[in-house]
Image (cartoon, rainbow, N blue to C red; front, side, top):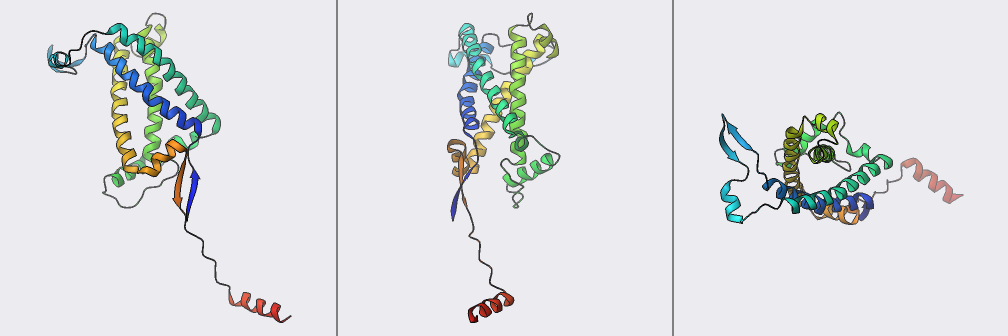
Length: 239
């Protein structure tokens, strides 16, 4: 028998889906800012080995400096990103959902079992509640990454006004490197997240859209009466 089981609240689903286009615009506008000053790569003794975006990339896609446009979009959508994240964290704390989200002492061991199961090396299904161990680590990490992006972004945007924040982030240049690294982390998270959604199937995706899952529940078999119970029933019928 199929039963409907509630899984995700409306606010959780709302913040989840709002975050996707907001982060996409943030990454796109961040690239416009970066392309205006392509400063990073891997060099040894002053010799450049790897550039994240080589010259042929700019020539092929005809990318020109769009610093003002990138900054305008980035700083506008930063507020949506911040408010949406603040709503999610506040809901998680107030509702007590953080208990199901934060990793515990068994999480990292169980996450290894989840990885082996996803790679089809281990057949046994790892412990699964609302979130499995790998999801606990990933979703907690993405919250910390969001806080890091806000902190480093403010340190880059206003290094004089937020001098103490800039100092905590290791200085302006290191804050910029951290901000760029976190952006790469979001891209990898998106790709892995989409693959995991496809592997999990329609039921899991529907839960994030509609808030419920459809589960197959085995009907409980009625236990056969014992000899004592049968005797008592006969006695009652005689009387």
